[in-house]
Length: 73
Image (cartoon, rainbow, N blue to C red; front, top):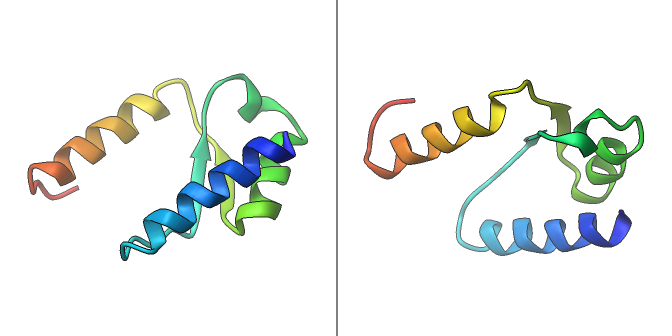
């Protein structure tokens, strides 16, 4: 788990190098239900991590698509 969280942290750092900033993340799927996994991700990335509901991934994709076309979200 720690290796995957470190890889994610590297990807976040690469995005930050391009001016993108994050302070929280939403996890979805099975690992999000774990009492351990979100804590590991939060500890390594420094992000506030919460678990999303059943449609959180779809809502996130829709928000990104909206940003891509310049729509207000």
